[in-house]
Length: 212
Image (cartoon, rainbow, N blue to C red):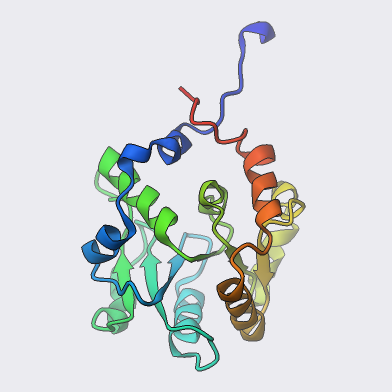
């Protein structure tokens, strides 16, 4: 019966309230051989983002001369993406390629702990309508969502509108939008913070860590 049904939120998000899982920032950066003096931009890829577009975005960020602070890029691949497409970046000292969750087995607690720390220690998240937009709001991280070319049509779908209406992320339609948004967030990471709080409150059931 309805009176016995309780909406409790997203189970995986309980991990974001467990302080015992958090690495110190220096320890996290050392684990992935990242530079503590550079901003960390995390680029999250999923199956909705075609590989040619993913590579285009990565090249724009990596080679732009107009980003105001030194940056390094952590690329978190969809587990089913073809890793070889990114081989050109494997030896780039400013890019880290990571497959994320293993596609060979169930998601482990270690997988989730790695994700918790990646979101916690990133300075900016870039994605294409990833569910990690919601999850990164637990850490009040600036979000940039890619809408280049025909991909922009995805943002017209009904189920996306509640997310957009919270005003907690920036949607970018071209290279200039992307670089301008990166610079705006690097200068002031609290931009759209109120919108991210609304995402957490309205779409993540508050993220109180009590889904179980």
